[in-house]
Length: 583
Image (cartoon, rainbow, N blue to C red):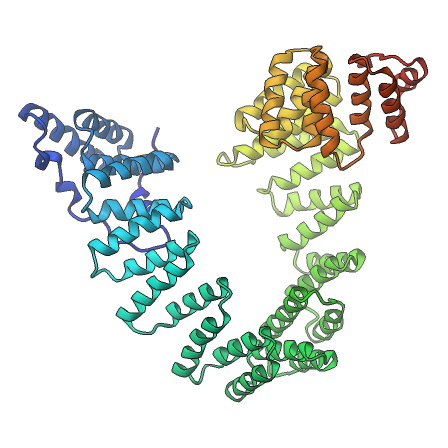
């Protein structure tokens, strides 16, 4: 069913560029083609205009059917192909939409609207090479539409044709004259080519044209600085200072300059003076400080010097929550978890609705496996943000960790009730967690039923596919189904040790020990965790392939890696495989 076509034509053309809309298209029919009999033509015309009327009346299902009838009568009708391409894009079938547009263009290559739509959608889908080809053809056909050169240049740049993109911008510049936006585009492209001299020339042109713009002097200085020419950089910075000494870019660039010449003290002084300057507002100061920290990170320098600068600002602006968030993030990146937590906690007390601060606190609690703190945060956030299912998800995990399975189940079912219908993948994750809980509770039928429900919402939910198939293998049930699901996980992540282990174990349970050995060895090669369970499985498989001594060595290794099991102890003592019976 097609329920949301209303704004589709807008969506089709508003694709980051502003192409001209189709004009007069409703008057166009394949009558000009002269390929149909009079009877066929009348039938075609009826369905075509009926389709247009139905679309105008927002009866989109019926309109789609009408246009489909038209295509059955004349498969070369470009207007029909164009109309249907719109429907297919709305139905989230962009490949089919592009196929239709390609056919429309092939049957009516001079039509601006069709080719523009094809170029736009191709670009939006990341098919930059094809988009560039279409824009190139449009430039030839419509040389008076200068904006096409811009779209062509952008598509060429996105497809990696940097030199050709610069040439397209040059063509546009020769038509329109020098333009700040075009010059900056060319500057960025020259930087991508690592042609610093040409990049510098572009900025130099802007500096000449706009002599009272300090940013161009700063950019030239930065380029000199990157090119190991600090003396030339200083000349540009001094010019920028004459124009606008309070420009935050200038202040940060001067700090960078002092860092480059080895005067760390002056670099910090430069930033410090800006932060205590009463004439600068807090937003500008934060901009200066954040840019300085980014520069320190880019040059792989110690970020500790930023802490004292934050302390200065905090004294001046103790109520500014954005400042506290920035400082907390900096402390967190330095591994100072408790100090970072203090800043984020202050933000939540001052501004309870600050979702970012709560998210940072939750992330820290999850990393440190502080389950009581995870529960506290999630319960609080469920009240503050009642439409945010993620807090139900993590609260369920916390209850699961505490083996409070019924609380976990109640939480997940409550969370499912508020998940938007347009987010089926999240529903799948919730049902996956519920399936795991039922398994832990020993309610196998409910576990498998819930896994099936999870896969209805996302058939590629890799965690569900793995757990479902592994548990089936342990129960020795529906092993072919388990094998198919496990194979899907290997296709998606061929080097994941856990998924390879599951796949190998399913073959083991089916008695195909040769294949089991192949996949378990691949699992061990890719394992980064020294999994004792994986090594134990390897020992079992080796025993079944007649490699008894090596099997015992693997069982002993599994014990050394921390696996505690009476069955494992017996396997080592008796030097034989013993099946571990599931309780």
